[in-house]
Amino acid sequence: TKVQVKDRLAVEVMQQLQQDPATYNLCDKTSSSNGFAVCPVTADPERPEMGNRGWLATHSWDFCTGADRKYKPSVENETIEQGSTRSVPEGTPHAPQLPTQTKESIEEEEVLGDVEEVDSVPCPVDLVSAEAAARAVA
Image 1 (cartoon, helix red, strand yellow):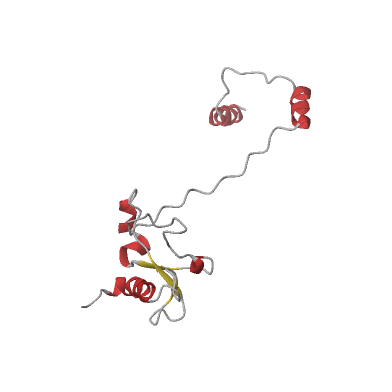
Image 2: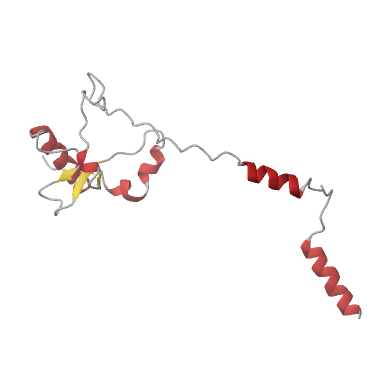
């Protein structure tokens, strides 16, 4: 059967993995990828509208990096659910803890004292207009 051009590399890399999972990964070079590692991709199911724009509108594969080439979905490493062919989504990366306020910055705030609140501040445009009017009169 014929495979659309936009899907060929994705199908090719998936067939390689299916035929020889010990040798190939989900992200790998194929005979048609001209030495580049590629992997199958799909639109995010939570934001399907993004699949109609950019790269995903015309491709069902993407280029991958050296780190991506080590990824192998499997039941053992829990990246495929038992009895399913769907990959388990990875969690979002953990953000580092924000720095806490140091004693020096607290002391600096005490030295500066309280900030005086102002009810209203004149608009800079009004100030410039008033200055221009004063110069025109003089």
